Image (cartoon, rainbow, N blue to C red; front, top):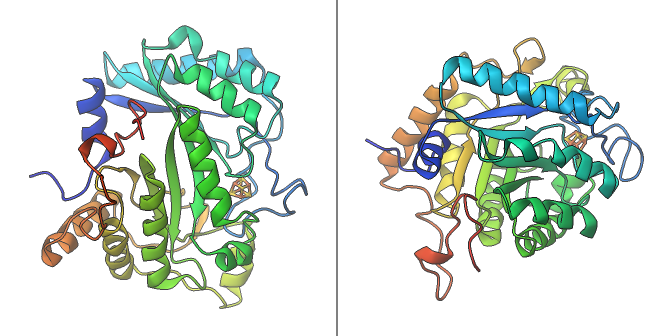
Length: 325
Ligand code: SF4
């Protein structure tokens, strides 16, 4: 039986007609929240690796990363689709020439096997020229922009040193859409000061923005972060799995029914993660979420009020084709 929410794996198979795998690429991007442009020291939960190496990778190095990733995937799947995933977080925080050089790496592999390109960045680092580069690529292959919202509350964002606002996120989604790009919004549940109502509020904003995809995870305390200090001082608590699943169910009920859930829990390596240690596999979190929603008699989007004139044709398509709005 299919779960009462839209999960990524089956959606990818339905959309692209084959198994699709992510190949992570490190373009060595930098971050305006570390170099002083927006802030110093980074977001409170981000470890020092989160902003990439700072050493920009040459086009050749990046092409090698992609080819090696494709080879790895083909050892598991003879005919895979691949998402070229520019993971280090502020990939558009570079000059447009550099962004073009980075994106050019996927060109020879479009369709075989690259079926989508995913670019992680911040809502406040999307220049017009960056959107133009991404929009040009989106004419040949679906392009997803992964944008961190994290929490839909400016005070919470300030307290965790995100140094962008909810309004900047909203504007960034509108601009991405105008450029023909799909958006995957990121959220963290359990940030200090956010609470259960914060989880609901964040979902509502993501639904209002009609993002095509969502990545959500529980707050994790990683080594070498500001949160490590707070946690060691006993000033920061993390959610237990039971509480997380209930808050996650609240969150999913308020998302757009067509948004694809790309991630439902955090998966930081155990050596980096100080808390929590649930000992629960991510598949079990997914099953517990399905059970919680079934107990409530609800499903993804069941608490979203449809906008006047809203219909199936205006719902997020997950980003395989950018929907007309
Ligand atoms: S989470 Fe992203 S924006 Fe925040 S410090 Fe890390 S790389 Fe920068």
